[in-house]
Length: 298
Image 1 (cartoon, helix red, strand yellow):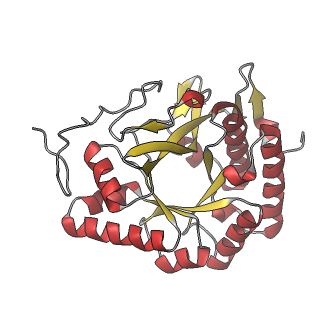
Image 2 (cartoon, one colour; image 1 turned 90 degrees about the vertical axis):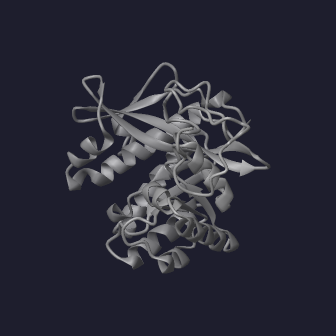
Image 3 (cartoon, one colour; image 1 turned 60 degrees about the vertical axis):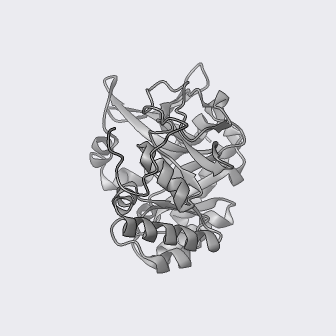
């Protein structure tokens, strides 16, 4: 374990959590809940691991950190962030919740690299006490040297017992045929794209048709970046399986309060235990019956 790329940059803390060190940056895990619609309520079913860089104790935009990392270091940083999230998830999250972990397929161009990364990941999962079946590997369908490399990488993840989620669907040159080839368990719709489609009746109809098509294939759907009540309402109306966004709960740095996070909440409720303030709650009754588009102030 001591030779692990990820663990070599990990610092363990007395409260059981871990942080990472890379150059001048300290890295921390944040987790954001993912909710599923169930009988008019929302249940917390999963959490996504998100990296939060700090420099001299001050938070930095994640893109600032990643943009300063040389291409040669990307594989090592992938291992570090993945290890960090898994160790913290084992300490901070409910044991029944799924854990979404981001992967950049472009760094896994060689099968030997893939095998080494998965071997390390299994060791970390064992140390963290996490069942591999809880892990959902998020991959972006476009970011790979070739389609064959991407398909091979996804099959290796699946062979290790992990579930697959395609991230940012609808962004850039998303391709429905790639989805059919990848056979993911989950598709996460791009937040900006969702908002654009919700702005019109025709757009919302297209969004609903895509959700229905995926669900019929046994593919669950997640709407990301839900920040306003009207978006949440339309997400439910579209038939989406799951939602994620500030209107429900913001990411929390580890250690989180999520071990005691309510199993079921009303769709309009915000997380009362979160350290960062959530968006204002949407009233349970008298919600605007707008079919699509932004809600206007009364």
